[in-house]
Every structure is written in structure tokens, then in C-alpha cells.
Length: 126
Image (cartoon, rainbow, N blue to C red; front, side, top):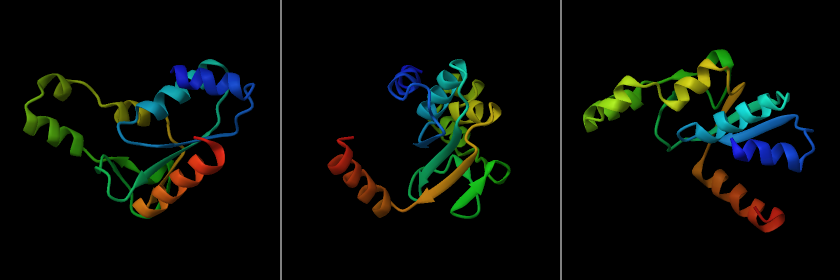
């Protein structure tokens, strides 16, 4: 959640949207919870590379909240690895979805993701 507080402070609370790549879902959920705590509810967008693990399912390259869902692949992997604790607890992605985040999702190619990461590093120092 500390990243959410830092974003809030750096932008003086003026946040219209939060776009975040989604792996485990921790960054998206943490930032959104921190911003909500501060009274800010930006439009949230999740980005998933085509070649990432498939914990989130949706048909097209762009999906609204009603068009994506938790895939259950996480449960299958945890079961195969014998991680009982994780079998009993909800994943971060499940909790994130229950709390209503993100508002929409996009799939991107690895090439586009890499190109944008390089551009942000060169132009923004990120």
C-alpha cells in the first residue's frame, strides 16, 4: 500500500486513472486500497502480457469488468505443488476482483510491453 500513498502524495491526490501490469495482483490491489483510503477512486486498468500465466481469463484483447474472471489456474498449480496453505486462502487476484478492481483489462504483446518499458526508461526515467 505504500506505493499508493506515495503516488497520492506525489500527485497531490489528483489521480484520474491507475494502469498496472498484473502478475499476482498485489500492486494493483495495494495501490487501489491505499487510494481508496485517501478518498480517491481512479479508473483502474489491468494489463496482462499474452504470454503470462493465465490467472485471468477474457476473450478479446480488451475487456470491461463484466467480461473477465479468475481462471482457477492458480488453484491447480498450488494443488500440484502441495501448498496446502495456499489451497485454503483466496489468491490476491480473487480478493482484487471481489473488491471490484480493475475496471477493465488489456492484453499486450511482449514486444509492445518491452518497447513501452524502454520508452518510459528513456523519456521518464522510470
